[in-house]
Length: 481
Image 1 (tube, rainbow, N blue to C red):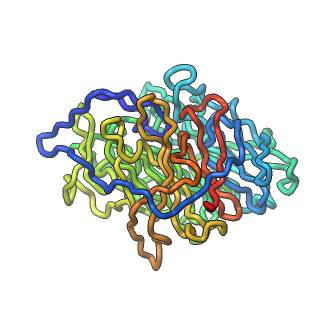
Image 2: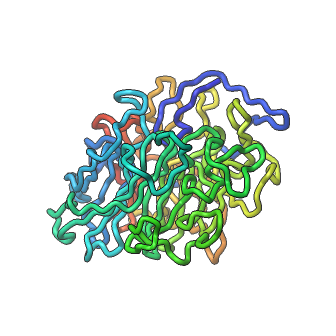
Image 3: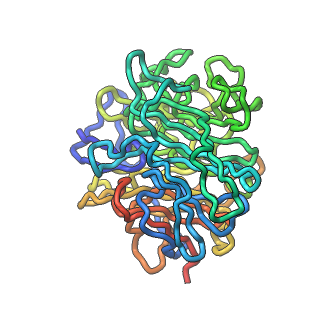
């Protein structure tokens, strides 16, 4: 049997053995999704900044067209000049983090500085928000931990202030911090960790299912667990794991009084549902973003063994995990590795599950070596430098398996269809791989994407796939000659 770590989240190293999938009713054989082919879109990657550690998200401060703000997994928030690529420390959160290296010094980890969002009124109030993985420190606002057990760490969302947001020399005031929410995380992986403001001015937060293989280690749903699917967090809307949350950081009607629960959240006042939940049924929505033009919410949800998926997320949606992996049924398979299979409807399938808009085959084997190992969500392109990309969702995959084990074969993808959300209809789309001008492959582990105030996009990557070292880079996506 194989032990696989990358499928427990986004950044990892894979130990390969033999894989035997057995079920009395079903068996997973062959590829479930279309193989990704190279498409007609050509781009050039221009180096902008280097010397980072593990950059995983880049965004802009409202009103600032000169800089890209990049969260580095080791705790540094960088301000990167878009003209010359020079970078400066905007905030140092490294002292808050749980020690990184889940399997010893220098090893991979999915914890760290994971989320960054500037308030829509930042230009006037100087507020920004972060999500960090921190040591357990007191009672959490949300927990799925059984009695007399301790979480691996806690996901903490904080508010900070920049004294003079219009002054390029003004940085985050460390004394301005306010804790908004604290969540127990059972294991080191499947943390989600993205935070973004929607067009509605609310703060959205993505959380993974807690890290257990096949998502069978959670608490029972108030209505009873799904037959054969254990006590999974993804299908338990009573807790916040495996969900995308929606809160008002300026409000105070939450249980801890530090944020507001919007009255139009889909599950407000519904028994058995967390009022903060916007959508659920996710495995590990590591990165999500809003279309700059339309406000539609896209996420890449990291799969288990067979499939990676891209979802367009709507209020109240149930995205299927762990009843489904992608658009296929999922069998946790007892003590053996779980697997996806084709059947309609799935055994014990709840009504109303929402399938992804795109999916592809994943692999943890050199012999399979399909299209990737873990999806990394990106952005809908709304820039002006590459007209052919406008309206297309740009994303990628962390790495393919390599003989050397070095995770430096990330891939860059796009959805073939433009503007897949239109007139209240959500279309599916094929996935294609970019042709890279002047290079055959990315040559890095893909860790995230960035978007500046003009809608231009950036690739965030490093050479090692771990939150250590100084090989992290920011690459600007530009039009190929």
